[in-house]
Length: 290
Length: 254
Image 1: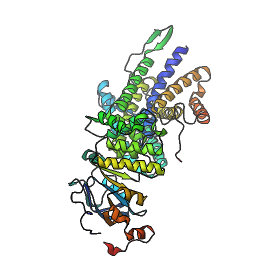
Image 2: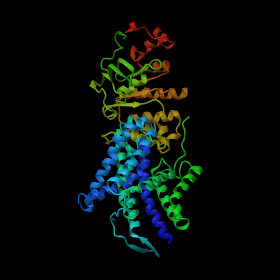
Image 3: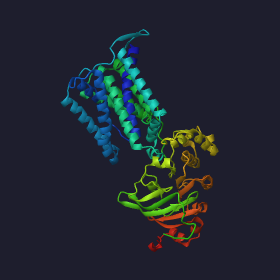
Image 4: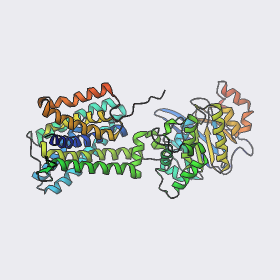
């Protein structure tokens, strides 16, 4: 049973991690705190479902269409229409704007598509495998494998390519990055595109299990936010650790403590981390220049 | 503008500003600024606070738009080109204060000096040469840059700027935050750079020390060039005393 809980927890944790990574990247590179991140994970599934049911596309084509539309809307348009105009006025106004955007997305799906929880096709058939004396879901293993590949690919991109290293430099010191000749606004755009891509991936991985519902955004967004903070807001690695930890603890707590208080677990963890290790588990204690 | 006889207006300037107007929002800081910078020499811009010294660098390096006027580098119009183009053409900027990535190693910091360059051939060799040129950087190559002293960090910034083999280095107040000894060492390095063929344009608050180091001086006040002359001439110029003891120069000095 514990092994099942562990793999299940890691799988949901991996999805939280994907959302948390994008969240942390947006903050690091452009001071954007995106409280619509959960809705960013909820929405692509609906683009894909619409492509299938309304446009009649086969599933694989619907995924491509959904990916492109999501990246355009949640990456490029989000940046150009919401972030760029509002961010010069401060971080807090942008936070409020993303909260409003989250509401718009959520209510739009509910009113224009469906208020029901809709089934979402899985990319692998659901089977139960027997591994080391325990029963493990193929769905969970698939989620873990795909997430791991995605994170590795992102890490390779960020550390081994010039564009990736330019993005990292932009995140660490945008003023200096500009002086080094880096096109800072383009790097920031790439961050938004990457965030949207991670959200699409998370959406495709989570919707088969939790169904596609307009209200899915809230728990995921909260988990992404908490995972990013718990891991250490300034580190992408922290977002991964935070996400996995959150998923596992949540799963075990729901099974052994109380299923009703499942939603409260992430908040307890958040409070504990902020009290005892405010820089996050992997975060560096912020140095202040005097 | 001072129109001295020979020696003060370089014939083949590496940099020339022509009536540059620039500022922040409605505030104009550079007020038809014009001057020339000699090739292969050290030129220092001095002037009171608010004169527009750092703004000149920002306007030249594409960090601030020039609303009118022209900037010529090596004879070529580079007005309002972005930093990446200027780096490719051979201008680099070492800004005021600490401009490093504190969490990265010294070596990694230096590497990032070439991150936007298309011309990556030979970059690795020049990186090693750079480290060899400044032994303290070689010693601390794999150490986190935040642990370096102020003077060492400034050295790192200079070494990083040299990675792309620039013809002209713009260096903004290198002496800030440094002990007098470190200032001397930094100035000595600037002399070495001049000897190796790099032209230097420097902004300095520490006017006397900077002019003693330099070949030429430019005095900026309220966004206009007031004096443009050999550095040793400016040092003994009585108008300098007037400028730095308050009270601007009379406008008929132009």
